[in-house]
Image (cartoon, rainbow, N blue to C red):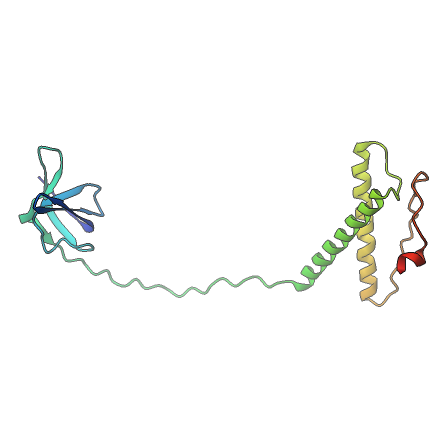
Length: 185
C-alpha cells in the first residue's frame, strides 16, 4: 500500500447492476482510483485529499475508503507583483515614413510606365533575354530617381524638371495612333 496526496481532477460514476460505481483521478497522478459504491464527502473536484491505494486482482487501483481524508490547502501568500511599466513604443518617424511611401509610389509608377513602353514596343529593348531584365531594371531605377526628384522640386517650389534623357525609340515600332490633341479628348 502506498499513500497518494493530490487534488481531485475528475469524478466518474457508472451504473453496475443496481449500484453506482465511483472512481476519481487526481492531478498529480495519471491513474484512476476506484471507491466502489462508496461516496466519500471529501471526494469533490478541486479538493486536496490524501489516501492509501492498493491494486486489486484485475489490476485496477482502488482507494482504501477508510483512509481518505481531506488535506487543508496551505494558502499561498499573495505574490507581490511589482509594477513594471510597459515598454514604450519607439517614436514613429513620420517624415521617414512619408519618404518611404513617396519612394514606393514613384517606383510603382516607374514600373507601370516601363511596362507600358515595353508592351507597346515604344523603346528599343536588347535582344538577349538575360540583358532585357537588366535593361528594364536600370530603366525603372532611373525613372524612379527622376520621379522622386520631381516630387522634391515640387515640394520646394522649384520647377518640376522634364525628362532630359533621350529615349531610344525602336525604328520598327508602329507609329502611335493619333496626335497628342486626340489623346487629350
